[in-house]
Structure formats: C-alpha cells, structure tokens
Length: 302
Image (tube, rainbow, N blue to C red; front, side, top):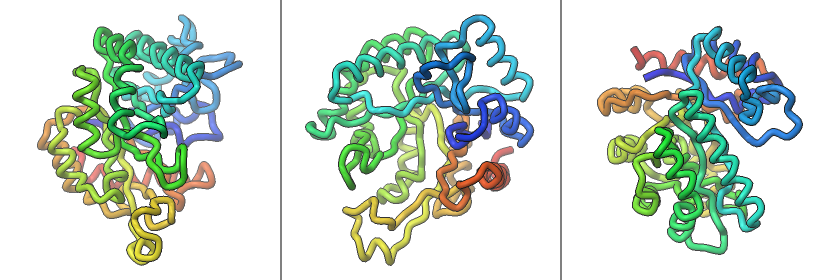
C-alpha cells in the first residue's frame, strides 16, 4: 500500500511543478487528471496530463519526471458524465476514454478513475444499465489491455438538478447493479469513504463487503453538522449540513480504515484528495493541508 495524492487540487501550477513538490513532500503515488486539452503544445497543460501529447518525446519527458521525483502514477482520471444527452458529447467522451485506456496500457498505469454519470430522465438503475451498454467498447478494451476502470462513488449532487444525485453509483445497492451489468473483472471502485459518511453508510462495512472490487482508494474525510441537518433535513444534501475535510479532520476513524485495508491485503494506492474548504484558497494552504493529512495517515501505514 502506497500513499499518494490527487493532482486535481493544483490549479495554479504546472504538472511538472506539482510532481516535483509531491516527490519532495514524500508522496509515493499520484492520481493525474487527464481531460481533453485543446491547444496544448506539450505533454501537460497546467496541472493536467495531455495524453494526446504523449508522443515519443512527450512520453519520455513524463516518465522521466515521474522517475526523477520517485513517483508512480497510480491512476489516470477524468470525471465527466458518460450519460450526456447530447450524442456528439457522448461520442467524444467515449473516444477520450478509449484514448485513456490506450495511454494507460502503453505507460504501464493500471487504473483509470471515472464516473458512471446520470441521465436525469432515467431511473438510477436504468442509468447503470445504460452506462454498461454505452461503455462496452471501453470496458472490453480495458479488459484486453489489462487496465482497470475504477468507478468513483461520489453522488455528484446537483450536477444536473439541485439536491439530486448526478452519478448513479454512490451506494452498495447500485454497485451491485453496476457489476451485474458491466460483467467484467476490469470494472471496480475508486473507493472514497467521505461520500459514504454523509450518506449514512458505514465505510468499514462497505469496504469489507466489496474488497475484491476496490481498485483505488481516495483519502478524504467528511464533517457532519447535526444542528444544520435538523433544520434542512437529509433531503437537502446541498444545504450545508456536511462538508469534505482532509483525513483526520472529519469523522472517519483512519486507524481502523487503514488497518482494514491491510487486513484485506489491499496493495494499491491511497490518494489524498483535497477538497477541504479550510485548506484551500492558496497554493501554500493546499500544500500545508496535504502535508498534514500525509502525517496523519502515515501513523497507520508502515
């Protein structure tokens, strides 16, 4: 098990600079955002990886940068809605995911993190089935290439409509549907316990029940404000009664969760994701928050 971070929080620096700092700060792995990048003239644009620019020199520069900073890319990530209603957008998303699978296979990166998304005109279960149907070429390609597709369990509340989930894979009941329809060993979870906390799901139980499908882990915490929830109810998830925090600043018992990962023989990456409003707003605060979270988690990672 290796401790890493998600580069998505670095909005104002280049990817080489983000990787340099991650290595100097003692992180071992990175999850790297890989959106389609128009007009990028090199292998990166800001803190994102330009997979279309990974020709011979670009690929060599990227791998050299990782190696120089003693880092391993644990996952490529692109979090969009594959169930977009616009056929042209859906085709573009499908094409980019196929490019990501090809890139991951070429670079020896095992995992791609993504979302199921949602078509708001369909029930959640039907969205799962539609995702599996539309993404079948990507799933088959990943399976053949030895690449894993890790579905993030974020509800993505408000993505399409206020207070409504925008990602149809946010709880164990829906994970069951996902794995039934996808029918592939290449499809699993990017397990994020913070989402489960405010949804009222025990992260330890969910982790234990789906251990064989956990391909990637996000280290993020959540803080719940009971008095505010008393006022706005659980049906108002955007009502301000919870917020994401860095590990150690919320309600998750990381000693027990990391211990359970050890017990389950999880050998992947644990990537800290910084969406903590207290530790955002400046590059210095983001770096300080990530370093603090790293110190907290290292207590339980030999």
